[in-house]
Image (cartoon, rainbow, N blue to C red; front, side, top):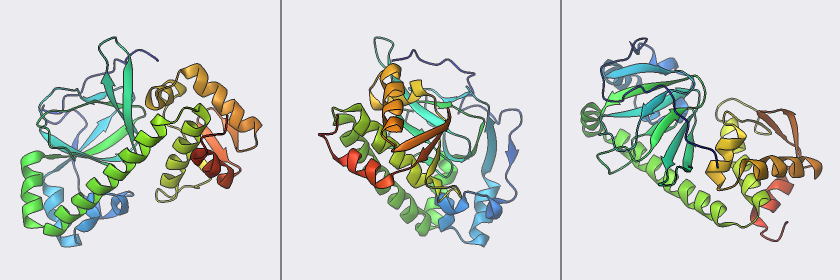
Length: 253
């Protein structure tokens, strides 16, 4: 597995970083329908706007480091992030990738459990924990939306654990591509054309494989007619049913 990436640190507990701005138009946010704030009415969104900071994260920046006190919650509005834990021997495990509309803050820990790193030029909406707690108390439907999101994340974590437990790299990669494809349509994209903001090394560290194995497996799926690779970071799904069968068939070698 690849070595940990060292990016530009942007502390989650500091004052607004240069370039941050107070949000003015949450109602027209392109990912509002995917975010937890979709539970709020137009009038209630104004209360959210007053306590929200829009923070840019350039490629390679670190939003927070594991072990730091949690002071804010975040919603990713553009770009992509990874949640990384570095092992004692220097290897890293990528727990998950954060895509637009995803919420960072569903944890009972007082400290960050992962490094949060930008793998593309990104932007997050940042709200102080205390202010989000107040919003949740004032708007119970926001609390219910967060509970729904927590349940969805538990289901996703269970699915990811199942995928990691499989022995065959092709099964893992097929499952990974299908999970990404399921996110494309809600983001306004083509569910059969998957954009990969992460590199092969990131995919390897997420699936518990080597980068060489990931590259060989992409080639194998292409040669089998399941996918096409028009660009390094683009996957076209040619046989969705075949990928689904593969992701559930542990006998496919």
